[in-house]
Image 1 (cartoon, helix red, strand yellow):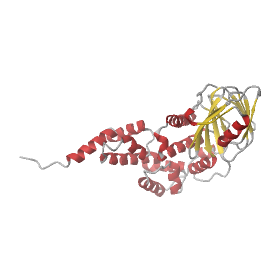
Image 2 (cartoon, rainbow, N blue to C red):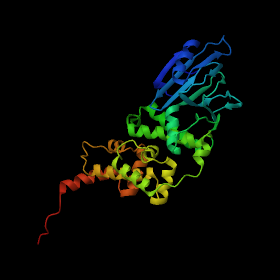
Image 3 (cartoon, helix red, strand yellow):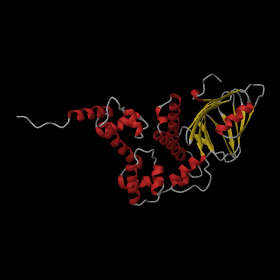
Image 4 (cartoon, rainbow, N blue to C red):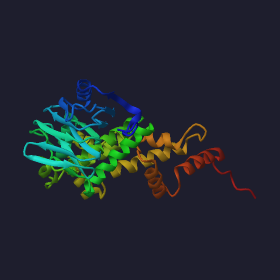
Length: 341
């Protein structure tokens, strides 16, 4: 394996040639498993890079030689393994796939399984905390899941819904690799984790896909009104549509349908408009020497600064920086004096 070839190189967690050490330390992050080199004469070159957040972790892993991996059932995690190079044989129960850069494997880890990684294979791995993901699932459905969440083994990375999910993974990866400010903002990070969970649940077939895709019950107008009040009062907080729905006692998808029917928008679009108004109000009275558009935007939960600037200009007809400069000029100039003869 070439030096520094793995993603997340600045976040090295393990580099070893010892099989037992690799098995133990990789297991700390990705679950208990067995590890055996196919050819014991070829030295293992295990490297694990990774970062962990609240409910999601992002890792890259390679062993440098052909290995057999036998993950054991665990209650804590679910993993999505995306080969960056090579092809891995993966079997779980009756399901068997060959994972490639176009076909990831989704490891529900509810029963024993086996993987064969060839020499040189490297994978990007997204780890989901099972409790957090199942709680997120419950908020989407409006009820607590009664069975453990399990996914189909193969994830077709060429399908449009999965490509959307993968673009969020790539955003998280870039932020982690570049030390992006987004990961230091609780609002932005929670939104990013929630989006990763939602996209995975909607894009990848699971034992809850039918429940997620079925017709949603109508919500009462009062539930939408309470949601609007909550958004107005807590717009600065790291809200997600699932948390808003849970707070007003309905499912997330049912609340979305209620917003579309009653307000011709969605909860998150409504929240974005409220936040745009709050950003504008803050920029209007800000000091250009002490206030930055980036800080204000992040504080109000805008993750993508480019999209924020575009939405702001569409809404107000000027850029955020123009508002900041103009607001100060308006304050300094004061009200117009009486007309002179």
